[in-house]
Amino acid sequence: MIINLLLFLIMLFLLIKSAEYSITYSSRLARSLRMSEFLISFFIVAVISVFPETTISIVSSLKGVPELGLGTLIGSNITDLTLVLGIVVLLSKRDGLTIQSKILRKDFVYLILLLLPVLLGFDAHFSRIDGLILIISCIIFFISLYIEGSRFKKTDHQNKYIKNSFLLLISLAFLLTAAYYTVEFGVKFAEDINFPPLLIGLVVFSIGVCLPEMLFSIKAVKRNHNTLALGDLLGTVIIDATLIIGILALINPFDFDPLLIYIAGSFMFISGLLVIIFIKTGRQITKREAIYLIGFYILYLIVELSARNFLL
Image 1: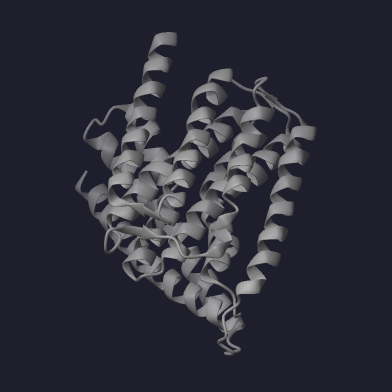
Image 2: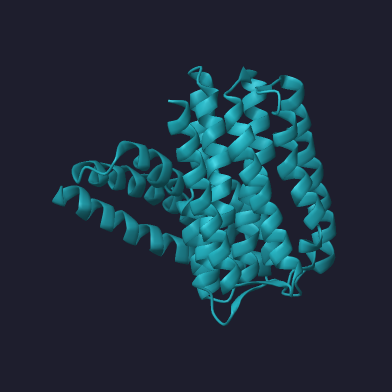
């Protein structure tokens, strides 16, 4: 038990340090490419941050249990939009998380992309056509976001993007590796102290796959890089909800428990709606609103547990 605890703490330390370096090189890369920090975090950091849940989802699909992957993707999105964002805002400086990026005006599009997998999966089945629709929607959105974001380029003319890109990728690789082993040893320690298996899966595992973006975002707001934090979280959520679910459906069209969409899918969309409403009111997410988000996550856990226990 002591060994697992020590290894968990060591991995947690490495996770925090790698998050710090990721912030540094993300910011430098944004300056050297003369792009906004939001775009860098949305396109690069978020794409790499989704590796844990993407790996779980693809492996589960290849093994014939795609429902596990779908549950991981939707569950991690709810966690990112409520618990993770709430914690990030509470730990931010001043009164909350101020939103400055003009690119965030695409709020309606974010909601459509979150609603799309819910609508397509309402029949408890994802076909290859559904998968193509999700993938194409993601690609079109990324292209439009890049085109619009290019209007807001930075003016720094440093030409060090190759070095900064390499160092960012290295730091993100350490971030993912440390996150993986933090979850690994965290679960083992939880088992050592007889933590309930259901809660290990529902809480430890769902939070575990969100560790890269959570630590990255916390470090970002601590260093006044709010757009880096929000870009990573929103990018991760959009990629999971469209591109990754689409890839799952293309690999192996599948049926799943309709409760997954009815409960988790609805909570995912409502979570996104709450975030957009909070952003639109005063162009910031306040600490009081952060508490509401965390409370909504707790409500999701209660509803999920109650529904599962009722059906057992």
